[in-house]
Length: 302
Figure 1 (cartoon, rainbow, N blue to C red):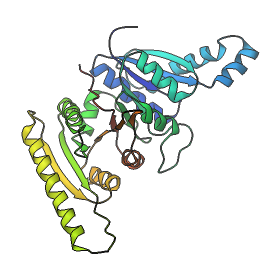
Figure 2 (cartoon, one colour; figure 1 turned 45 degrees about the vertical axis):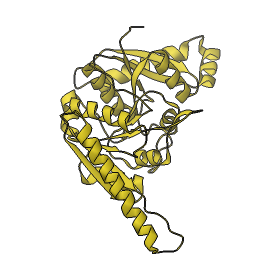
Figure 3 (tube, one colour; figure 1 turned 180 degrees about the vertical axis):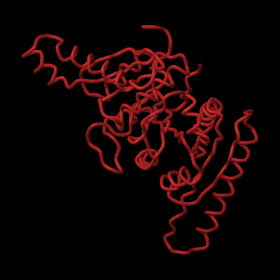
Figure 4 (cartoon, helix red, strand yellow; figure 1 turned 120 degrees about the vertical axis):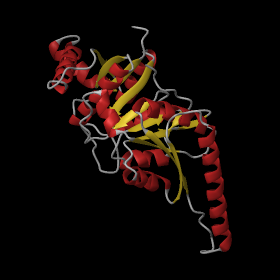
């Protein structure tokens, strides 16, 4: 394979994955990366097809469908980049991650919902599993998003980026990555920290209010210090809120007109990156793309 970085886009031939494919193609073209379009067959279907039609028949059929799907996705416009088509067999999430890692992928782009398992507050099971295991940044696109035709369409849609911050040790890496994306899109960056109110055993106890105020003051000082220390031309907007984190993040994103949410994935010394409950809930609620960052993930460069 080429030494150039790759943008991986798994598709299941749904309209939702068509939108993700448009994002992936535009990003690959903008960053001079390869575009790999991937689909994964069920091993049982592969075995049944080969028993009746011969070795490799389902793989060949799937490749033809991938090519048709790609060209149909860009039938009204010129595709911004020529893709590589990959057909695998196995459990989708495992194959997506294995192939992306083997290819040195810089990013994975996939829809929050696919052809099956669509429920309002739960995104597709394959996307969820990939997010729980990934060491590669993933751009998750909402199911109803038809995707851009060119990079300027993304810039027009993303005038503000929302970065929820938990003031952990991973904060600096997340902010640097978000700033890089904001610079590329000429967008403002809204840094949001949500303070969950203390649940006091005795309702209305004065100590709970004092603790909440102290936590808010600390968060505001930390964000202000961070903003002042960043050598970036990006317009930074620090904001501290009270409430349930995922609900507040989704609400602020809508109220402030954010076109993209950038979120960090939690890490475990034994298990690596893991999607926390707040990230899961935001992905379920978000109406805009979400860029999920594993610890210390860096964005692709042009």
